[in-house]
Image (cartoon, rainbow, N blue to C red; front, side, top):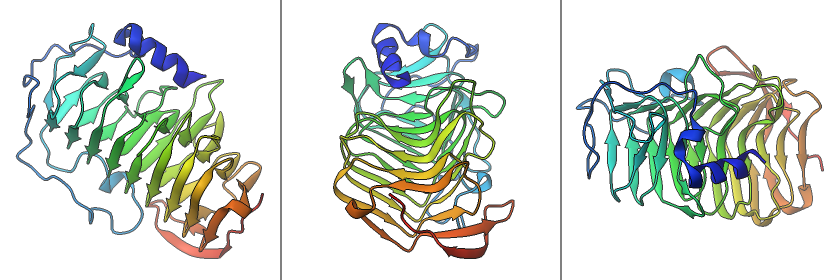
Length: 301
């Protein structure tokens, strides 16, 4: 599968992940406890008045970005120092998080953000940042793989938005606009050999422009233990919300699905295992504002 190939590539050489990314000719702050500083807004939980949208996620308005020179064969920027803070930076390639407790905020990453170095992964947080380019489409996920928190992130130009491939993934208040390449199986969030305690709360996933698709919410890994999918706005996909094969406490509540945006059906889920309540079919406007409630979204197994 795509993710397994990515992990193999990461352990061998980071350059294989971003062969199409341009190198940086500009210098930037050296990596360390704090690399880059915006001096500008840092965002917050109130940036979006309703559901996340492009104008209230990602790099906040007014932030001045400092371009960092790529340090992995002109393809990626690799962080090796625990506790590093990347604030107000532009990385014109992939970001490899190879140290624990890294923070990325108010920044733009043109490629992907991944925390795997062979079999080892590292804790990180990304907030108020934009991942991916609007003028390209990468098959690989925008952000992965485990032990990360994503807040108010704008993911674009990726076939998959988020990958959950381990424990303790938290994604909130983020916006994903998906694309696809021939042969892709595009997903907003996908589990792959995942683990415990996945939280996917108050996000918008728009898959309507992708053609090679699976689902905005695709949680079907048999290793899922405890997953919460709440208060999201989603649209597109084959079956838009797919939650199957999990164990423990599985919650799907208060989500809104754009009526008629799916190819085959709205839901494919193990209904008897899931705390399913308050989910509805809606219509929206071009700003992702809910304009009407069509009716309840029932669970279908």
